[in-house]
Length: 273
Length: 273
Image: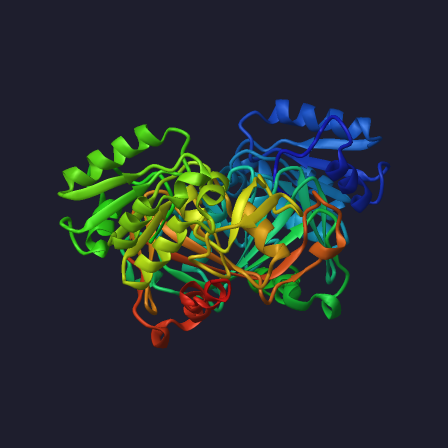
């Protein structure tokens, strides 16, 4: 469950409610990982309130404020048994630096393999990718070198996730990223919006939409221009999925088939475990 | 010459300088049509200063403040003999209401047929299209019915022009328009940027770029959703042309061939004259 940040925590809470449902209901074990945030306690309190008001009975805080804490066996056990694992926002570099390759990350994979719902919002969403959009902005046009990728947690391969997408007008930032890595697809998730990936299905819930950008067949001069220059890009493909959009299987995916295959392909992660 | 508004009028003035060059040089007859503006004298003074500082020797104001004035034979003669015709910003509905089907419009066509450069900036650019983007906004996603088209002057057919494009984050507005008219292409022009169309060539000059959106092969549910709802749009094609981009002929146009053909096809205008 990939959330574009800014999800409603006090009113209808469609996205958070859906997380609970995907985890199997409010009586299931849920954990909130605040490693991305520099204010983990405040963030935890906010989510605890939101989830408890939605009926969550067994929700706990996985507070990781330095990398060593992510090797804690007890915490890892708790994560491994969780049915819902929610990564909050903050800074995706912090999240990944603390979690990547640790016992907690391994426990998240175990839980995921057992059918747990892994959710990330904002930085927690960006950090789910193998190739993480780490930083950078491109204001009015794509720019060569405007964004930096980093190694992410790898729950999603071959797709670069960006968040707060429409609200922060980030299409140029995402295009900057995939212009230089055209074998990856880009997915921009709006605020208070989640892309749910399960088996071969995807669904968009919440207030906004999901924008998919595909440069695999684009013609661009990005390799030949200096850093900071704006590339020409022809034949970029764009898919806009509003809230409520749902593709139930690859058979009905049409032009989204590769996007779904990429999102659900675990080959790359398995390679390095 | 289609200008996205906000062109530099005091410094390097690349776009305005290019207009003079396209008109044949500063000794040629140039006219500035301020019909779009409610402050025609102020706008005229601004452009007069800018063009005179660039060396323009014979520049004059075509001040049309109501439709009847656009039937003035003397004014029309002046326009017909101009080598450069520049339409300022303001409100494209005003521009078209005052000029459409008048002697002045006919004189512009005559001048154009004789090789004069027709330029429009901002509202002057939008008003050049047969199908003019008249009003409406779509903030964070395309929305059915968000924009209204109007009948424009028809110097450009089968392409909807939007202006101030990147600066006002108008991609969703342009997508809203072409989602419902997928046989038209959309072209978004950035501020201080011009798309120059001549014979079978196009060129982008100035500070920004031109974004072309193509929904001709897109799959969308826009017909089935209520007004105000956000359509799903799959397989939208996007072309980004930065400043300096140039296609010299259809033979080298690649995926831009149809865009150029559309921009240069005068069939539609000829139909109604």
